Length: 353
Image 1 (cartoon, rainbow, N blue to C red):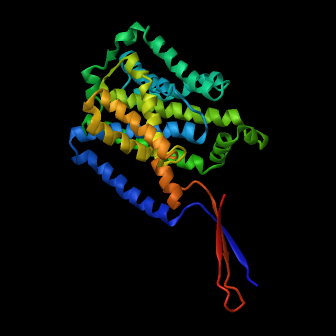
Image 2: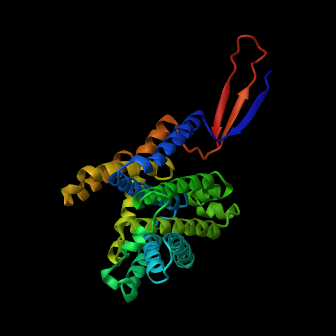
Image 3: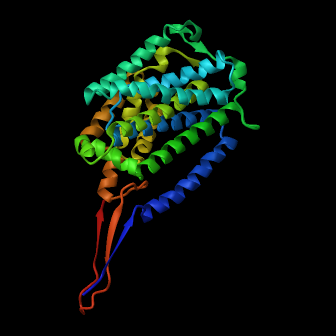
């Protein structure tokens, strides 16, 4: 006879090692604000903004099943909220930045009341229509430059500082913090009961409803949270650019880039957008000068990955080698004591919940 012991775990040796490596990497990235040149800081700032956008779109589509083609609505709204607060209200950069995120979350709530009445492809198109409506509205506001756009004054740009650091270093640290907060918040959410409800809605909405999941409230929470984060990201991107226009701010290519990064890396994994963003920036750095061929190559890469690696680069690797750097699933371990019968080896089994 033997007695069996069970233990429920979420972390693994791989994830613990990855956590230590992440801490070292974060410290190195923080130190970059003091030694990296402005060109490098600007590139890294943009990278972390794109990473935050990819993680938020992945949270919507990969975990909640909300395929949005209109996330540029909240990005453009965040940028315009920053410019409005700076130029019309006279707020300082920090106050204007906070308004940008809040504006994204506030607009997300009534928008959800409309688009959540749609499903599947109709919902995706509905979010794109929302972005187009906002683009047309801001194209008719003379005080914000109308269709031609508007620029921030030099004195506002110079007021972006932290201690003795220049503007590029401050924006870089803000983008790094935004990306880290986005990843951490997504990780903690997915480990919670709300995270379990999210994946249940994605996999089978009818089954989730019959199990007592409050479908609308969970979806609304995620939609508003991503609106908040996307608004912050839009404000940061256009604070770096110092100029905004409706065509640029509400360009559907913003969402196209998010989808590309998530699909390439792996939908429904926290690690996937990181890999996808790295691939996208490598391709952009070396191929952007090719003009139209650059976009063609991006399309070929996307189609090839979807055909050959439908789970994305990281998704395929994780499934093949059972690796998870951000484990959100619970594993039930069954360990048996050493059997009393001579010659019978001890055994163990593991299942995933």
